[in-house]
Image (tube, rainbow, N blue to C red; front, top):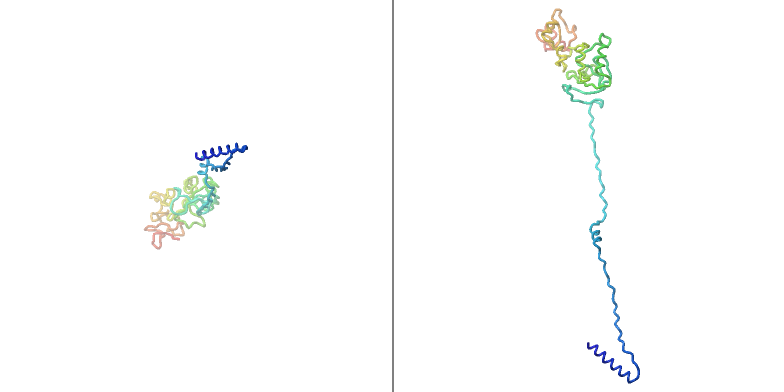
Length: 269
């Protein structure tokens, strides 16, 4: 306010002087202060969407390398060869070999090849091919046990040493006992020489031949001193060379004196 009064007073003085001198003096111009207005620096605030992106976006990371663990497969090989499958079938008896294989060959009525093994039928014996009934027995075996079909062979526990390189066994074809079927059809006989050692001598199909009953003894004149085979009463007096049986049971009184060393076994081989 004081500044304004001073300005008015000075203005009046100058006017009066101008009137005296006859000169017109232009009014005093007070220079305005130059005010420089600095432009405001505005910082742009991030938008809500940018904030969300800033929050959700994460730096890219290289995914971990996947490690594959190799799988180890263990293969178990079972003997005998792969053409034979070991089985625990109900027909298998004892602890000797019992296996299933393809029928490769029929040699004769009581010998055939199963899974690459030559099999001789246990206890059951058919005629040789050159003998009467030999070809008929072979044909019967070939019909029941066809080539390339499956057969089960159950080795005789009492004859695991075999016979001339053959496995001594009972053979099943089409779920039938070939050994028994040959006997039932009168195409074979039981080889009583092996009744005392065979695992199958007590089987129904072989028992009546290996261990004849008392009635059979009377009818066939078989002496009771030799219960596992049929040897007639003397006379004549027989020696081991006169009969085909070997290693058979002998009881007292042993009229033919087959048990020389008195150990209960006759005609030991």
